Image 1 (cartoon, rainbow, N blue to C red):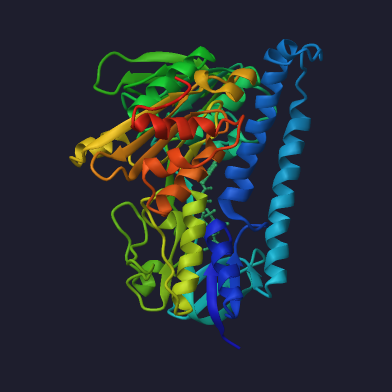
Image 2 (cartoon, rainbow, N blue to C red; image 1 turned 120 degrees about the vertical axis):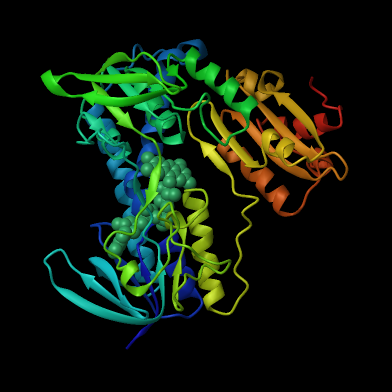
Length: 466
Ligand SMILES: Cc1cc2nc3c(=O)[nH]c(=O)nc-3n(C[C@H](O)[C@H](O)[C@H](O)COP(=O)(O)OP(=O)(O)OC[C@H]3O[C@@H](n4cnc5c(N)ncnc54)[C@H](O)[C@@H]3O)c2cc1C
């Protein structure tokens, strides 16, 4: 019997879509080419990177802070193999969770690479070469993204690695060269620095973390430098010589000029990700892509071919798991005749370093560029009681509110646990809150979240603890 829906790809976009569609009464099939479900996020992205960030943060903290708190554990010793096992067990639990949810929601799963043979028809080729064709009223492309590569620099996932190899190293590299100061480079650079590497980050632009509020980035870069990470901005790596068992990276100024050579034991290429549509047969069925290889969709996630939809990293927009998840839910609801919708103005963005960066809404630069008149409220964690007692005083909260209406337009946090705190700002913005609404909301004491309230009070120059 044909399905109502075939979802190709079981990452956060695909598996959320499949489950929501099943909840709405659809008969759903999921096609996945990898051994486990969960896509990039659960297998080689969000989950394993956060496991290593968490473990390496505790490792560093136990050496630096425990003593100050009267906890005598001696110098921490690293058992990297055990740390990797801890990470793998976390991944295993998560991917098994997706398999359980598929069973629970009576979703059929097909192991193999899916190819759209025609609208309504997906051919699945299993690892042993066997193929079968399944049919459905609608097909969702949720095939995600793959590592973006640099011409002339071959990733072998041992010494020249992508994020995937950087999550698997069996030895702490003495010198790690990170190409690209984006989220993934800074998160994985932080992991290996904490475990003992000397980390240098080379970035083509004159700033780190493009897209994030400038003031936040400036303070964050200083904090990273204090922790021992070296940045070479406005620079590009043009070649990595891997002869003689050593890696020698050639680094040139972005604007041109004399090159220098930097020795490294491992090079991490983290210049971004590219949409993945290989083998899907999109050209044959006429699904249009843009000049960046992303599947083109309308506001309802419909591609140029009726009955074929796309969501997640494979379409335009921030490459984030929660964006893919929300699109998965939205398209399932649209197909069920409901009003599925994603508010792209309120998608939080988090960098899970220490301290974390979290933001939602517009940066100051974006507001200036679009000529919006705004007010700023800022509050530093040095003035927050809980941050002081926890020895977590780095960073600040910044709230940007419309000068005329007081509506919250953007919230930016650098600080411990910023990723959890930003959810409050996202809810407030989703409900169209004014900074006054956050300022008037009773926040629990003593928590870091009081800094969010104080920043809201500071919009109107009435912060209490400053
Ligand atoms: C190191 C790293 C850390 C990250 N950390 C975060 C984070 O902390 N927070 C966050 O929000 N985002 C993070 N991301 C990004 C996040 O992983 C992606 O945005 C998210 O996984 C995209 O989901 P998706 O469903 O679109 O695609 P994916 O998760 O990429 O899933 C696509 C799936 O489709 C399958 N597939 C592809 N083609 C076919 C085919 N033809 N047939 C069958 N199956 C196919 C793939 O095997 C894969 O399982 C991180 C990424 C990386 C690499």
